[in-house]
Length: 284
Image 1 (cartoon, one colour):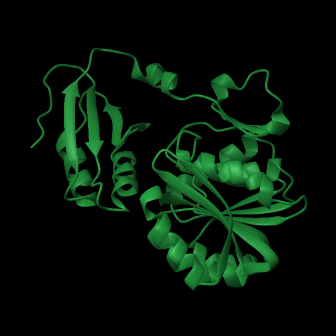
Image 2 (spheres, helix red, strand yellow):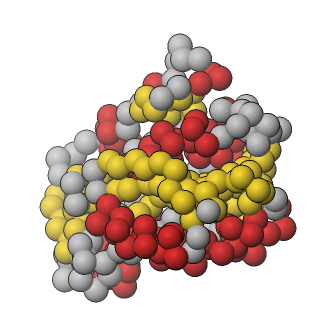
Image 3 (tube, one colour):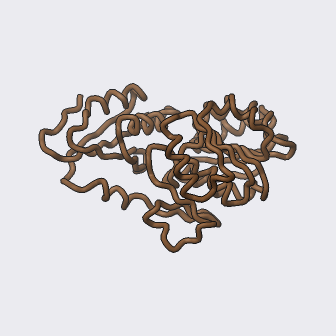
């Protein structure tokens, strides 16, 4: 069991999700945010965050083990540091083709038309995760000016904003987590695309058919959910429409390719970074 330090120090929490589980990593990250983490850094297979003095570390432990019984948790006191500022050093700008994803404090002097400014917050999607970057890299080859796009599991709305900046006429950013909605709406406003990006709190499978037809679907979600969504994505696309899927571990690539083939999809392009795989697809 974890023991809280009696000293007024921050606590470092390092989490190793179950490498045998395709859902453990996302579940552990969600658990950390749910118990108050303000940011999570990926260090190889580890998820790293820091909690302030007075944090109920037993609650952190319980949330993580509930998310994944096989999780490994390491804690250690850290020197007294103003983490409210120090964590910013871990967030960088990412040059992704013609677009840059950056936090506000690194945005000065950049071309607003080609810059996506995301305030790191509770919602997933700051450009720090390889799955986000994979979709943004694949996006220009699939998006045509004037397209209507649906972003499923939109999180911070970073991908919806990217689509708007690349020429989409209308983007539906659909997110089930109500706590992510204020961040998504603030990011849409911050990036000047509120006239094109519309944020909805809803289940993607239920709402997507209601906003269809769309020319492009973006979905950065765990692979098991992606597989469940494939039929509704197919029925919601226009003729010639495409989709970009991410949130898939590279070790799942072969299995995912078999599933896509069985559902009648053709692979148009792939992107791989670290342990993650992204793919653009079209109905055969």
